[in-house]
Image 1 (cartoon, rainbow, N blue to C red):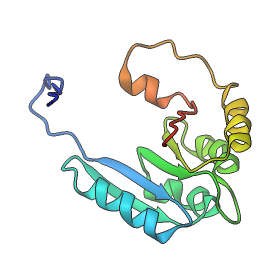
Image 2 (cartoon, rainbow, N blue to C red):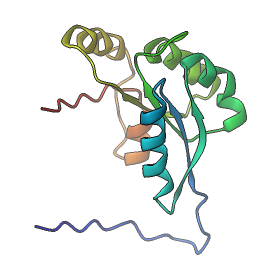
Image 3 (spheres, one colour):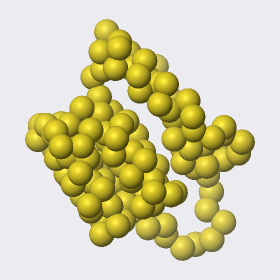
Length: 139
């Protein structure tokens, strides 16, 4: 089985800047894996690869990412606590929460993300900018 995905046609001939991604995870193995996936894409670059939420908060303005892949469980400052601080420094930041969560942690994270404003736009980029918890159970 194969799947084809059509990308939107650009209205102008200008080449878009690559998507800048900040990877934040306390595991060097996971940071390396995610960074390699990102670097394999022609329209994406790793803007920063960091170990803690505190490092991310300190460097978000300097690295200027479009997207942050943020682990939930980290030393010094966890991803859930770092999230509002990152959004306070860069409101239009797209954040992807990534972690292996226990059921209790997943419920807690879900409750915290319910207070996010509703998604009202049909634009995929606008929907991605609204902070939401995306849960994926892997078995």
